[in-house]
Amino acid sequence: MSSNVNSWVRTRDYIRAFSGDFLAIWGNTPFSKEVNNLAYFRALTCLFGNEPDDLDDRRKLIYWFLSNDFGIDKATDTINQKYNAIPVNSIAERVLRNICTLYSQAPNRRFEGDKEKINESYQLADIDSKFRLAHETAKLCNTCLVMPMVRDGRIEVDILPPDLFRVETDVKDYRKITALWIPINTPDKDGNNVYSFKVWTDTEYKKIDSEGRLIGNVEPNKYGFIPAAILQFKNSRTDLYGGGLWELVLAALDDNKLCFLADNDVIYSGFSVWVATNFGEQDVSISPNKILKVSNVTQGEGAPFAPSLESVNGIGSFGAIEDMRDRRIKRALRNMALPTNIASMDSEIQSGEAKKVDRMELTEIRQRDAGAMVKFENDFYPIFAKVVTTDLGMSLPEKTVIGVDYVDEQPYITPEQEQVAKQAQFDAGILGAKDYVNTFVKNELITTNEEAIQYMIDNLALKKKLTINNELNPTVQSGNVPADVPIIDNTGQ
Image (cartoon, rainbow, N blue to C red):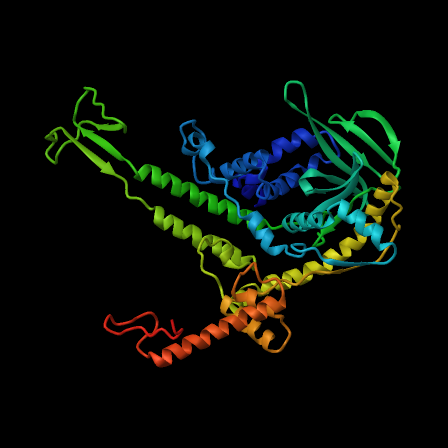
């Protein structure tokens, strides 16, 4: 039965899109059987990046997805003719920005040992932005490689998704890494891609070409271990890499399919088609749109219709398709425990309580991720310290225990709620006069509490004067004064 099923089941879209490219890179390595796995992760990462290669690969993936519903055998088939107009929209970056918030603000770290040197090296490496990228990449792909290194005297940290590295593992333990392979793309003089590989083990480092031939000499590994850490959120039961947010890929593919249909609907229902009936063999030309000629059209008894020329317009479905896009993307986000307003273009602002409820599952995800990231930071540090000490001589402590306090997300409150809260804080003596005034009025001349107090005193005096004036002249209110009522000047002038 399975053979019959396999005879008609089509190859997965991401394999058709990318397996050829990865076979060219990895085909002569020990990872030739992992080409489909590499293609899977490329389908994930091409949605996250915005480099030209990412956009090209995104269009290729969406093309093969559309081919399930559109013909591709002829050059005149729609998606072949419109290949360069295939949409490449992606909400992946926005989704990950909402999921991965631990490093939106720099966390507070506690180190055992020489705190100043460690903090200095972390600042030089821009470690918080690197960890944020690592968090997003690993959340998307489940796994990423984080590799500290020194380039031209500068500390850098490379973040590689699973389509940009491969590992050899112990035959008895697939989680024990014995070698790390990283491909290098070097264009030749004609602009063709030439691939080679960096290969690390605990004892040596070498470069080999795509045919497996050694480039240069084998060098001893000066670090004594592979200088990279693996960040992973869920352990796979079958291989090192695991899964990833595939439902995000499906949502993006579906959204771009509907976008493609909507774009075509606008084009084909936006102009008229001229139908020429029974015009015979003579040429008929009408610009700018083409003409459809129909000949030998007869009535019920066989008598031909009189020649006619009419214009036919398509019935557009753009609005219905756009509504479906909105519903489907929101459903996909909800299935991923994400607030649906991530995809909304509406300017409506949720109340603090509504936003809290909407993001409840995100808060739970954040708490789980925090535990994984704290563990990773402790696993990463000894590797980072060894690389920096070996290559820059900064003499960082070999080991330390790192405590990480992530900055809590600030709940949204309306301006009215903020004013009430500020009033209560001021009345209780918690908030100073300057900060209290600046809540309501932006005045660059108010720089101290004393100036703020004098500002309020002056305003209260003016308010009292206005109250007295209104009591003496009850008809003079809100600037609405009858023409026959004289205005009394209380200044005595």
